[in-house]
Amino acid sequence: IPEPPLGTMSDTKQATKIAVLGAGSYGTAMAYVATHNGHSVMIYARNKDVVDGINKNHVNPKRFTDVKLPDSITASTDIKEVVKDAACVIHAVPAQHTPDFVEKYKDAFVKGVPLVSTAKGIHVKTHRLMSEAIPAALGERKEEIPLVYLSGPSFAKEMVKGHPMAVVVAAKELKMAQQVQKLLSSIRFRCYASNDVIGVEVGGALKNPLAIGAGMARGLGFGQSTIAGLVTRGCREMRQLAIALGGKPETLAGLSGVGDLMLTCFSSLSRNNRCGMALAKGKTVEEAFDEIGEVVEGVPTSKEVVRLAEIHKLELPLFRAVDLILSGKVKPEKALRLIMGRDLGTEEFH
Image (cartoon, rainbow, N blue to C red):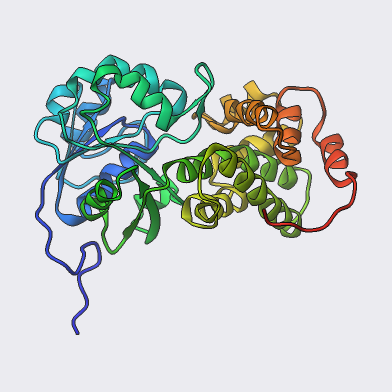
């Protein structure tokens, strides 16, 4: 049986237009992978220099300057032009800016066209997951715009290199997740569908503070055994909170849970991981931000996780330790002693 060309699926798909909101690293990467099925992609960017760079030189001058983007990717500063005639709209704006962005542009979205959020985190100002914050921002339009949430182990830098990877797309109605799954899946970018929006979101959001913890461990000179323990116990804590919020525990054993957690905790490509390393070497949170140059979602998320732990009466020692460090209340070395010096117990998986 002849194999399908790398970058396309074996079944026949009709090429269409995909809109991407946001020209940062992940928005650019999502635009890149969306072209694998022959789709044309238009990116919304506020910066005219970025738009001109993409349209004239096929390069994003702010991100991945060494990557030549396909001719089928264009850009515009006009969001209405970007979403016009699109089969789906990929929202690639950081979590803390997502509600304001959606509220500002909600009238530009087309009724019945899925809005696919890639934002991972808990909105600090409203204390909401994206699956709560985005509908609230849409207001009276929330019933008109189908919402889908994409998560899973996918570094933007590896996406634009064409590395094969797998993610999950979740929607309250499985058929909507499957619609997006068919649009975006290719031999290089495989999407699995789910209807567990809470579970997928919790995994995508909570892995970030744990990745900061893993970076701290690396920065203190500890090896893979330390990080493996953190990943395993961290996944248990993620599962506990997912259950408390109404998610399915088995989702946390999948791509958006342990999959994304392993990626961010074991790789220095992770912004959250690099933030943790910088903190372990004595830098402040602000200095770490300046060094990384991009949003580190795990910092605001850590405080929200502790808030949720208090509400649901969960211990979550790893998350609490990371938050203590980020709040400046303890040093990484002391946080480690607090975790390792806790009362001994049995290994449980509920």
